[in-house]
Length: 122
Image 1 (spheres, rainbow, N blue to C red):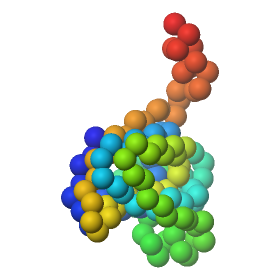
Image 2 (image 1 turned 90 degrees about the horizontal axis):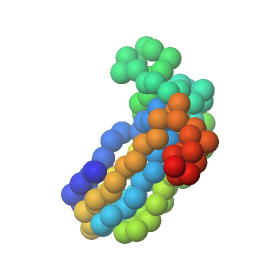
Image 3 (image 1 turned 135 degrees about the horizontal axis):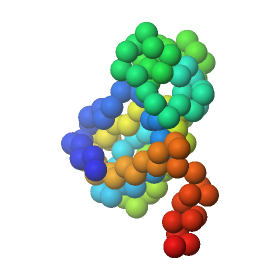
Image 4 (image 1 turned 135 degrees about the vertical axis):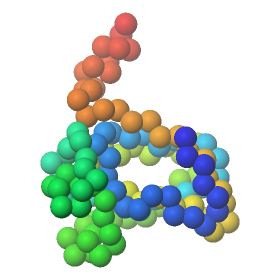
């Protein structure tokens, strides 16, 4: 669960190594979401904190622009849900007038939708 005051940047642009569901519980948050570039293109199930490593997962605005990343921004409000496949670049920030509380649920890359359906069936 992430709690953020108004007018704050959450995390810088990055991709996650798992599929992610975001549930906006309270307030609102602006999400910049971009198609994968760099290490995210291969839909990795791991990331690296080393900027020289191919699986590095953080991006500057300059890199997104230089690589021609296709991005769009939108606002999640209370009860909205966002799904992002692994490798999707995203950068959240709160709006100037609202705090934000959202829940992130990640599904590991080696866990398939078939596995999910088997769990539901049992």
